[in-house]
Length: 192
Image (tube, rainbow, N blue to C red):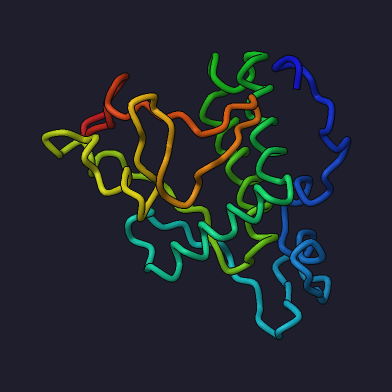
């Protein structure tokens, strides 16, 4: 990738990302639908349910491992980089982070991320991070989130070197995800 505006390698249309109902995404999950808006039956006979989003620390070990496995599969097959590039281009072009559309844009983005995630495991919902829980810690950088069991620890350069997403080449070509925990900003508090 030569520049942040380069769209080479992006499929012109990802039909599953155009869906707004379960019967639309059902074929992408490998299932069948009876045509009803909220109907999708997987090959194993299981009905696809609405996604349930939990705070990431509230996931069971089994749920967390299933989520991490799905994210790694997305990365291996290119879907993670595809959806990351959509975010990157919107950021660079001013559509995602600059202006009044920030929350609406990200709400829609997360919905589409979850659609891709559920292609890999239709039982999953995209977990969220309630940073107000970490805002109560004397040092929020000590949160369990920043451990190898969750999203990994960093070295002196800020590279994520443990956890489920290392080594992880970024869309910018960096060999690792970079995170500077505690260097800039702080978690939200319940009053914000």
